[in-house]
Image (cartoon, rainbow, N blue to C red; front, side, top):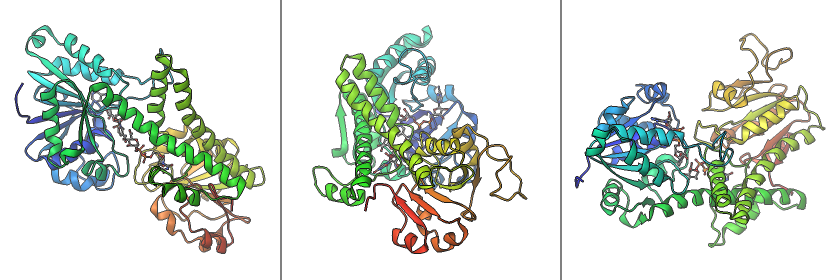
Amino acid sequence: MSSSIKNICCIGAGYVGGPTMAMMAYKCPDLIFNVVDINELRIAEWNNEDLSKLPIFEPGLQKIIAKTRNKNLFFTTQIKEMIESADIIFISVNTPTKQKGLGAGKSSDLKWVEASARQVARFAKGHTIVVEKSTLPVRTAEVIQSILNSSGSNTNKERNSFSVLSNPEFLAEGTAIKDLENPDRVLIGGEDETAMILLSQIYKAWVPESKILFTNIWSSELAKLTSNAFLAQRISSINSISAICEVTGADIREVSRAIGKDTRIGSKFLDSGPGFGGSCFKKDILNLVYLAEYFGLLHVANFWEQVIKINDWHQQRIAKIVVEKLFGTITHKKIIILGFAFKANTNDTRESAAIKICKDLIEEGAELIIHDPKVSPVQIEKELQIKPISENKNDDIFSFKNKEGNWRFSNNLNIFDNAHAVLILTEWEEYKYIDWFNAAQKMQRPAWVFDSRSIVNSELIKKSGINLWRLGDGS
Ligand code: NAD
Ligand code: UGA
């Protein structure tokens, strides 16, 4: 094996592959990073000269891309060539929950990982370090290793050898650049010490050595799933307590502050909200549940499954509260939805609480106007699987009747006319500065604001004459 590395390839130009390689390229100007993807459109978007059109929105990303792209960072569909020239290959492809077959609904679908491993086996030359960047079930490294050892063409096999490492990614969307620049830890799991040291050399360009942890490969894979399960468990815990607050007169913000001061508990990840979303928490817990069931640990499986069940229940609870407060019926009532992304500062809508809540409200007959500063109407339509009302510039925005669909998108906040209620689902900064006095003049009476993120100024809302419901506020 060569004692140094020069060319790095990343398979998968998504929310992880793109920002992670951009940060590495920024911190390691002497190394070459090639990010490859089968999705031509995505690669074209990464190469768009207009940096506001990158496929993902992430604060700070444009600046780093501007400094690295076409210098030592390249986005391309030339998968074969980039694998051939790589010393290290990161596999950073999607690993969603399996939809059918054995383990459907719980285990991860590894078809994209398997396809990547086969491509590597086919095209890699010499000794190659293959790094699991995707979040994977425990013992997937074994599967990858066996594909690499057996699937190459005969001539290739003679010349090839591989070391498989696990190097899970812990970035959170919306803060990805900050998280990558200053990670709590970098985890490298493996058996080949030389390969582990070579990989760690990339990170050492900016991460202190004390934060780089070496473990065995199975611990590394399991630590990633466990980390997400613990984080999600905190959210389900605090959301379950928010329901108790509402019926007892307690206030979830005060309870969170009080328990967070205990240094053993800590103050982070204690914000109650509409339920956790995002592409990973649910799928990674389901993965853990599947693993526990597979090994006959049913009590363990049930324990973790409850985290998801509480989250589902909590999301339904919010839609029900809206209906109850609006006199038990929302048919033809205009409800403004503020925020569709699963959290602020991202354009990602995967598993967003807004999907289930909006569907439930539409099912009840409501007419929704959905605003989000970064999510496109096309994306919302894809998630809801319901067409918006037909676009006609001359239409009165509020006359939904006899039109297709029961929602429409707005890219601005001049949307309060005749609305019965506003439901805040994503904590976008701009929602903090809405002029509620002005909105109150335009809304139907009684007007309601439902704040599931605790971001509005409750005193101002009340003074404006609008009724306020805040999650977890029983006071
Ligand atoms: P994503 O869907 O945004 O991106 C995956 C990309 O891989 C897609 O663009 C897809 O076209 C590409 N791809 C699939 N198969 C391919 C192949 N054979 N060859 C080339 N390209 C291929 O997914 P993501 O959000 O970046 O997540 C990737 C992995 O990282 C998942 O395992 C996820 O659990 C994990 N993860 C995600 C986050 C996050 O915040 N999104 C954070 C940490 C870890
Ligand atoms: C999460 C983890 O935080 C990352 O460490 C991990 O790498 C990533 O999953 C992954 O494996 O994909 P992410 O899902 O991007 O990151 O975002 P989070 O900040 O964790 O938020 C997840 C959900 O929990 C969001 O819907 C958010 O609104 C919600 N949340 C978060 C709360 O409701 N309350 C909180 O206090 C924190």
